[in-house]
Length: 115
Image 1 (cartoon, helix red, strand yellow):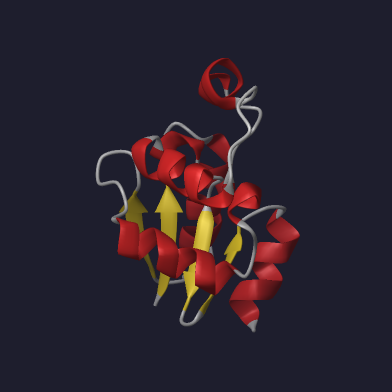
Image 2: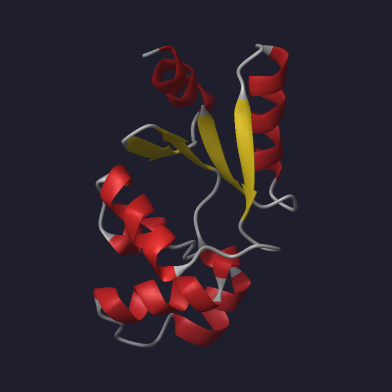
C-alpha cells in the first residue's frame, strides 16, 4: 500500500490525495503535522527517498526563512530541524515499499505509482 506524508494545509498534498482517490489507488495518510514522524521514521524516509536531507526542506517556508535561513546548518542540524518543525518537510512524500519520492509534479507521481 502507498503511504502519503501529508499536511492538510498543503494544496499539492491535497491534490495528490484527490488524484489517488479518483484513480482507485489505495493509500494510507500519515498526517505529519498532527502525528509527527519519529527520528527512526524520518531516517527511514530519507533512506527510501535517496536524497540529501536538505532536499527535503521547504526553504521557501516562512518559518525556514525567519528562523533557519541564515544559519549554517549541517545535515544533522537540518534533520533535527525537520523533526521539530514537520511543516518544513517537503510534501507530499509518497512511499511505495522500499522507495519514496517527493510528490511533485503530478506526472512523476503517476509514473511512480504505475511502476
